[in-house]
Figure 1 (cartoon, rainbow, N blue to C red):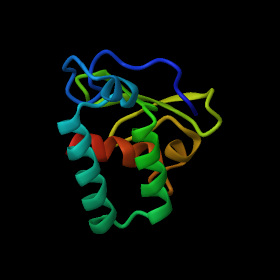
Figure 2 (figure 1 turned 180 degrees about the vertical axis):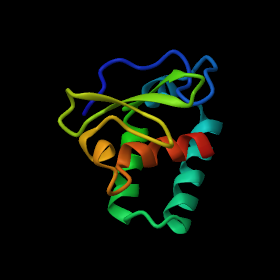
Figure 3 (figure 1 turned 90 degrees about the horizontal axis):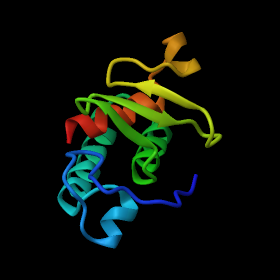
Length: 116
């Protein structure tokens, strides 16, 4: 999924973004550092598959995780680039999340962002 428009505010903390690079990414430099560090720690300490953590990190970097309420509930874009789901660190409305057998990469992305 390629974004054509940037974000005026950081997707993590809500502060105004000033640089073109930050606007394109959707995160300020400090929040981006924190999210990347949280992704690294999550990948090393969780029991999640490395592929799932990589997909979650990619979702975050592409701006596919948009906060809805109190920066704890997010709207996420599916792999097809069209379908959206609501997710939080505890649950997700995607088919994999509803089955509950494994943690979906949407939830992993929410866990990373909320832990950062």
